[in-house]
Length: 124
Image (tube, rainbow, N blue to C red; front, side, top):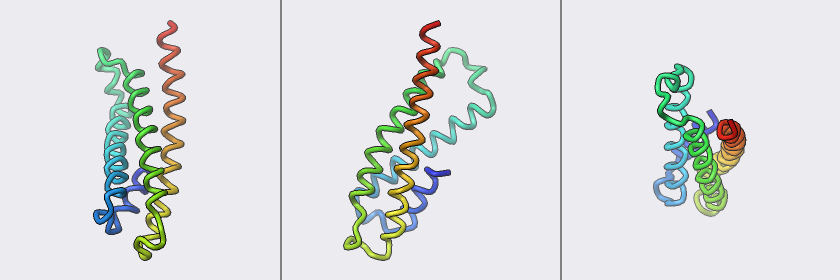
């Protein structure tokens, strides 16, 4: 839901005029789609039917890459928001920046828990 907020707040503006917001949109939409994909896989328990895939490693790599790229996107988003740039889009861009950092912290937490899960699997 928070990732959806990030890209809808930006998509409602003229973001395509500013390359920095294009990067934020790419990261937000890409990881939103992948998150929904993995949510469906886990909710339908499809992962139990494919035991060849190391799901703990997949989760760790996914969450880790999402954390790093969302952190970069959030910093780019926050540094690109200025009143001088385009004043009627300022509030949407500022809100998207806030929610990008919230999503980053969520992915950081997921990365931490994925790391704990992965370590417990490798110790067994």
